[in-house]
Length: 78
Image (cartoon, rainbow, N blue to C red; front, side):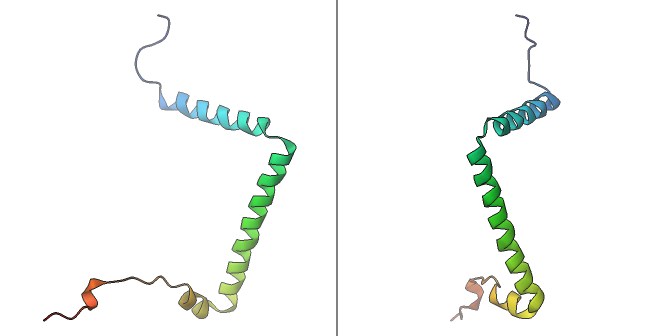
């Protein structure tokens, strides 16, 4: 009966989320931390490769990676 009724305030929810993240980081083993760091570094390398390719040839890069949209408007009507 000591608990307040109703919904928790958003600030309380945010504090709980932050506390959970900190607790999860503390629970990670050394190996898990290294795996996470490795994953982040791989993503960074992939990003830098794409950035370098774009800087060397912006037009060619954009043409190569352009999204293709399929449209029904191209069909001829009878």
